[in-house]
Image (cartoon, rainbow, N blue to C red; front, top):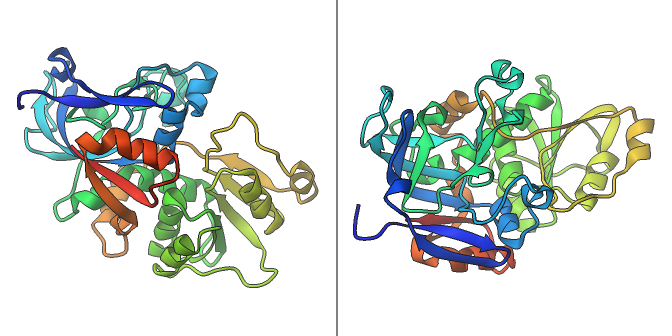
Length: 334
């Protein structure tokens, strides 16, 4: 494993440094895998952990110190007792939401809202901005042959996007509006385009809109309104924009997190238009389909990647990304 294995630790808001991984941290328990991390993505939620604005930090559910990183791909380096479905050297990815497996939510397949759940790099389990990650085998998946690591590392946000698309459940032939073409918004557009759907995107960034146009999405025409909308930006302005573009009786799935305690809300328009609003969190029950989609030519999340940095640069990259001085999708390569 080398002379010293390290992980990124956020000790308190705006303070992150590399620390050594102890031997105890690198020992998989029964049912667990030790994974040598190949690539890990940094996302806005990791920035909110760093700044202290993340919802779980504000509510007291999660506590410092914490190692971030819930978007990852790696190779199995060791297996705990009882693990039969993985072997050393297998390429794997894994879920973020890890339910308890025995409560009513887990037993009905909604482990993403399990009250006892852990979330990789966010709540109760160390994340993957590290040389090695210990991870439960029941929440890991084999990466299909032919899928590049730079696409596989973004399987987790792709799964989040697919879950939101499935909650929306727009019928064939319906046009879907996506407000916010960042990582999850772009991936939701990609999933819908892979299904040959008509997809419109709006975003404050011309670069993000142009990227979405590259996969066949379009911008709305003047005064165009929609029955089906995904809000993926998580701001007061984006929510107002989403509601303003909806037809009466429409359905809005919100997947963007604000990083704030409260966001002003266009309540009257929702009531008057008799709109349906539903939140979408995590990625339950979609992973086999996501990995199958990544094998196709229609799905290339790696087109979002703007830069890859070594683990040595992870504290700097997290700080710069949080401050807005780095743009696009940032990967760390331990």
